[in-house]
Image (cartoon, rainbow, N blue to C red; front, top):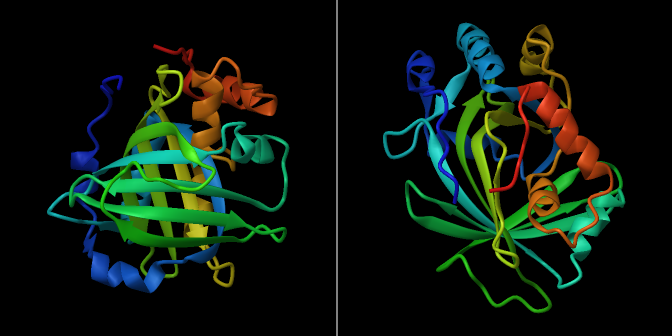
Length: 246
């Protein structure tokens, strides 16, 4: 997997009060509305400063505030889940295993989006990343480093993914999003959002993006990316850099 050399956000996170996993149970938001954003690392540094001043807390696990994740996405041989998303089907799903590298725990996760824009996620612990799932096989592995913020009212959380790298488990091709940062605001839809205002003030705008679909588009020459090719070009403009496969 390509090595990521980026800004170290440890100092920027040192001013946040911590929130524990136990406290995070109050904001699991397994049935939620998600809004995604994309910025670069300089934009993230400004956003973190604003969030700290607004009282946000940072998730701390195993003494760390930046958590490495390793996900493996599953799909059919014909990439049905990829094409359902590319073709903008309102009802769609994703299946993946996710390993939280700090703790070594792994979960099988199933995400389903309904035609009202709400996402429901189910998960259960498993013993390994590679599973035997009927009709599905490993497609793309995604590695990234995640920061998780929670608002003072504990009604929303923000996941911030940096150093996003891909390995296609069918083609062997690897790629990196360089210093692109993928942000996801997760809410139950019933409460106001201070973070939306902070994002707007930093000129970070909503950007619909799927790490899995971008990963397939970059690493599978046989896949037809369609609108995801334009998404990649838009990310390149945001980070002012060319995204290339390795």
